[in-house]
Image (cartoon, rainbow, N blue to C red; front, side, top):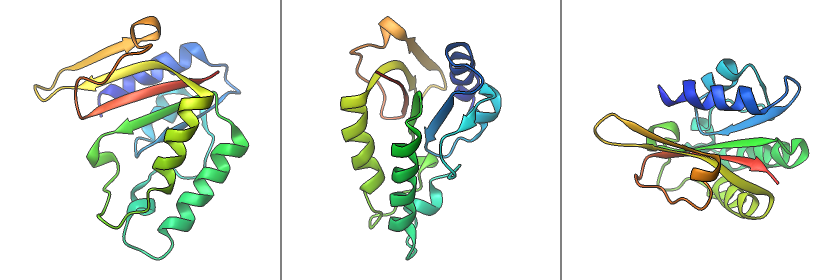
Length: 144
């Protein structure tokens, strides 16, 4: 996931070492590269999306952790391979993200991952109000 490098650099420049961030997707390298702690205990969302009896409860736990930690930044990875969603996957986490980012966060980064292998990065003012140009994209939100 080469986009992780630039995303992590942005987060590193815009956070203090004690700030916690949350990556909603399965890209834990962002925490490592940004040198920031995760606001949640789930580094991957694969098991939260699987067809297994604890998936929904795991999503609820992640939501509780996010609500309690109130991370300064949320990184939403909208890439199918970062989720491995199943037809019967719970939408609890995605529904929470939708509600929360619309009321408590503002868009500060939008990275479109194009089919040609090139990514388009928009940060700060260029990201504000922008719409994704690709189905595969990453949105970076900062708490208001």
